[in-house]
Image (tube, rainbow, N blue to C red; front, side, top):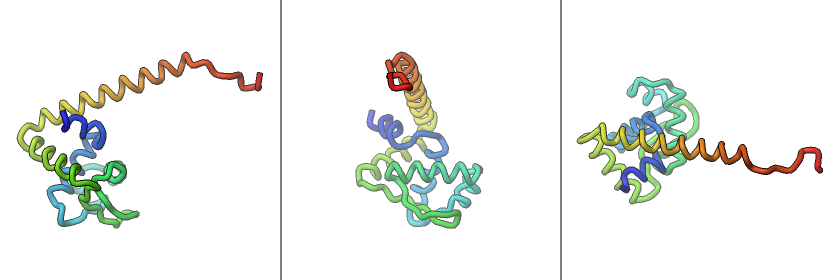
Length: 130
């Protein structure tokens, strides 16, 4: 499902989801990390991390520093369409979005665990050059 893939690839946590939807609802304005923290009742550090991740995902744009305003600004039209679908679905069936995100988180955890396990058996050269 496209929405599940979008969440998997672009929105990794609930804080990011809430920040993204807040900025989407207020697309004509901007929010500082401090204002987001106040609005969503999270720490400013949490808001910073969510904004940074969303910016890397091409969903928001902003400046540097505590007083820099961030805006909803998707890098592609397709991303804007996906966020619009996400916003509608979240308003209609919040639990289904939370279930998708939980499922994605479990899949990431399994992948990470498998990677860590396989690394344990990887043959490596000796450190002393022999």
